[in-house]
Image (cartoon, rainbow, N blue to C red; front, side):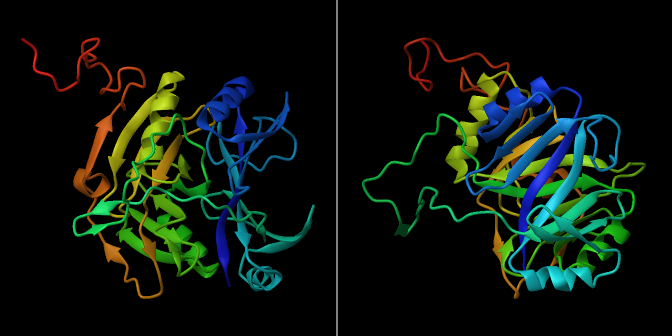
Length: 320
């Protein structure tokens, strides 16, 4: 069975205008713009759908207010759908483009599986000049004015049923990459792929809910460019830029009016069938090797609430 990753997500939101402004600023490509329907896509065709909170036909929410209502996972071929249809708790429906498999996970979240509609893209991140192995000769790295996300990278949910959720997704073919035993689990769709497509987090006394949706971009430079642009647009950074030591990924988290956070993400570890999952103890050091609380101001290019360098001077110039 080959699950390719996230094909589509659907949000139910309280403020459609704020959602429109956010995704336009975020860098997604608008497909449909109607009063009661917004559809966007990334470069490879991964789709973000936005509907009013009370839109007919929306799956039930797992938490009050604006939040994600459904995750659609793409598969490679029809035989994958046939295999999924045999899994406990999975039903088959006639979708708009053929057969689909549907289920509700133990967290109460609606999920679907369909033949992936993502398309190949030819984009590359900047090469790095590591010591002893220069890969970029006579070529400066790019500076991005904003981000142009490539795909929906991963999604993270809070849960109060961690083990049941892990068991459910493993039964569908997901693979455990790493764990915080009893607190959280990183899951990837297939043996060969990025470190995680789904992260489930159980906090003491916590309830089901959305934590964030991550968007893969080309490289660390696009993480910075996207974050600085979204800051200039007036959206609030929760944390970032920073780096996760567990997945090696660079991140920038922004508060999302559709619910939870949105993340720019790059340079994630790639795993295969030889990877052995690890156990970690929750800590600030395990979560982030380094991170900037509240982000960098897009205009001053300095940490928020820090004075900008003097006009016309180098930022490192000693004042006399």
